[in-house]
Image (tube, rainbow, N blue to C red; front, side):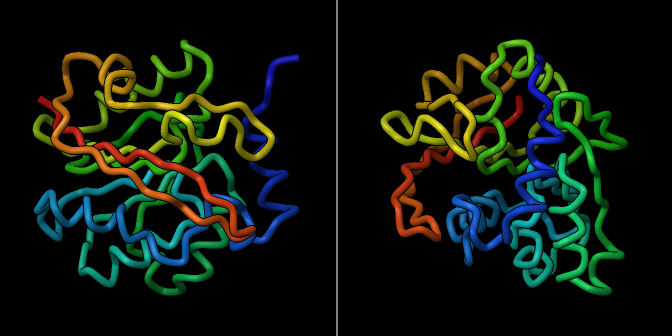
Length: 205
């Protein structure tokens, strides 16, 4: 039976609090650091893919970014964030979609992905993700993508993942992307376990 991503993530967010899942951060410091380092203007389009219940968008609003979008496969995860943001949610574009099938209505200056891409263990799914990315990110746009590092966890949320270093990520993304910087992060989960992440900042060329 083919794995049903949508049902899996619906089950996760229906059964668990967003603050109890292993990827939860009470402050997404490294994501914010890298986003701010790009110097994107406050009115340029930014999308957080797999952003679901993350509080990254809350912090971007506080940073006066005004052209924001959040994509997630889980309707429940998006509803949690909409409720948390209240009236501010009206100014954000919300997309309930599988990223491998997303048809972006516009191009973005910055694409952020923390811990979505590494769940794509199927080569075909990764190729579709990168096709969507290439269509949705404008030339000279910024890609900030974070995955489990080599030697980090091999599974998350009961699923196998793919670990990455810069060589593997460059090979996946292809010639349209230039690596600007990479950083490591030791993420402490709500269960007080350590997960080694690798963050990459690429420029689309």
